[in-house]
Image 1 (tube, helix red, strand yellow):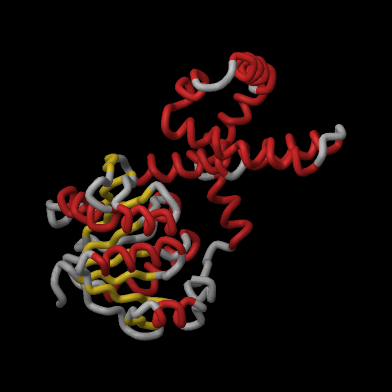
Image 2: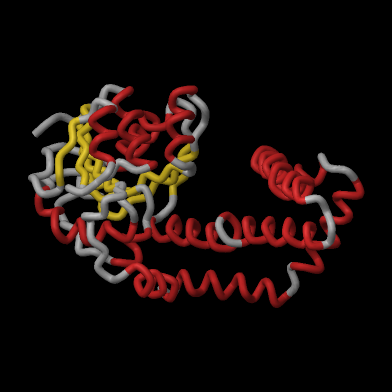
Length: 292
């Protein structure tokens, strides 16, 4: 078996690409495993990586990072995890499939979560410029007894010397991801921005001005919130903006809205959302997807 500095990455999408480049920069021997029909084969070869097709045996490594989409992970584990050597470490970048699919994982491997709180291109940029990246760390199985130290080292190798580490659990990370995506990041925020822009245009505001007001300035506000927090953001805006914002929040976020947020959270936690996902994507997604 190859040494501790060898890693096999399954998938070469946004995260897989960043992980592969960053860890290679740190001296790891990186092997890529891709579905036979994956469109990423050519890009990976151009980037100088060795690729293995899923139809072949998995490369022998100490570390395996499963970075294909969540809906394909259980199928991969069912078909291929027996090829992992005893004592190997299986890494996830999100807890969704482990928590909600409950795959039967081998008892002789470490199963860990190393979740960068940014998209792949941002992770790559942060590594190259030594900018801080927050990682969520969690443990599902600790066979070796040394997983926390291993996770910390991997986070710093992957994200750089300024990486920030947040200890959590697989379930907490999965629920937090889903709830923030649905209510804020991929649901509420883009939906509210689009509806606001549309209403401005319908009321006679010039479309270009509406776009600048709703989308371009949104970046400025979110950057302030990220750096200073919500209270710090309000301290830095004009009194009229602060008063108008507070009045609108009281009007829009009434008890009906709060109840809907609670319902979304409950649906995530009790598995109802996972059932919805499976009804839309299928219960047995296959790892042969060409987009991986």
